[in-house]
Image (tube, rainbow, N blue to C red):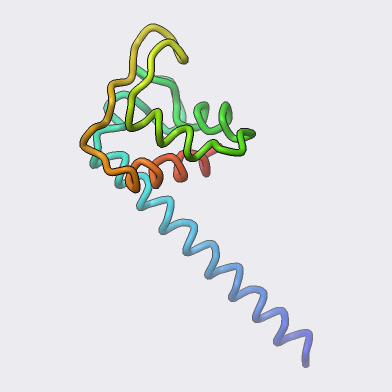
Amino acid sequence: MKSKSYAAFLLASTLAFTSAARAESAQGLALAQKENCMSCHSVTRQFMGPSLRDVAAKYASRSDAAHYLAGKILEGSAGVWGPVPMPANTQLTPDEAMSLASWILTLK
């Protein structure tokens, strides 16, 4: 009896975590679309800028990856991914930039 209730608890916990992760992912994508990130980036393919999955893969091993990317999002960047610079996103708050950076890092 204990094993059935443990299994049910484990299944419920997994489903709750998966639902929360999907909701967070949807929020990240919605923010990226709202702030026009998707005008130059795609999640899976290179466009004007690198794919967001490529960005996540490149920086995933950095211990400060989210803070680093949030700074790049806010301040802009040039020369890292090619000749096309990424402009500063001054319309974003630091919290929004951190949310975007954290979401991007989940895409690896």
